[in-house]
Length: 102
Image 1 (tube, rainbow, N blue to C red):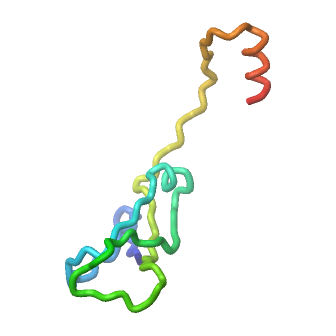
Image 2 (image 1 turned 60 degrees about the horizontal axis):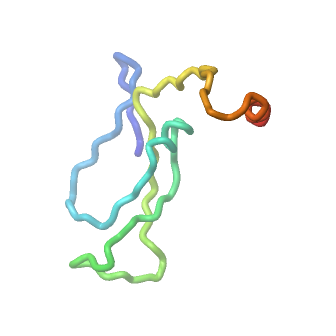
Image 3 (image 1 turned 90 degrees about the horizontal axis):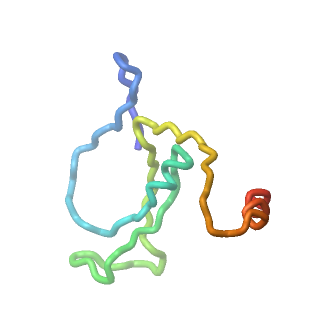
């Protein structure tokens, strides 16, 4: 999706295109953690389409895909890493080995 820069506050907003049809052709599932970790997720994603969509016919064996760009606005600040003391019932020597392994 293209974006337009707002002159007043420097925030870019998506361009709105007129809606032509409202037809469910499929869905895309993207974990929120994926968008959070990489900040901007862009690519071609396979649609999870129902076996039959009334009014449409499948003309090729290739799956339906959509090109998308996703981001979070405002971008979230990553949490600071805190060294927590983990309490376990393991002997102390096992706990020390586990800390070195991390």
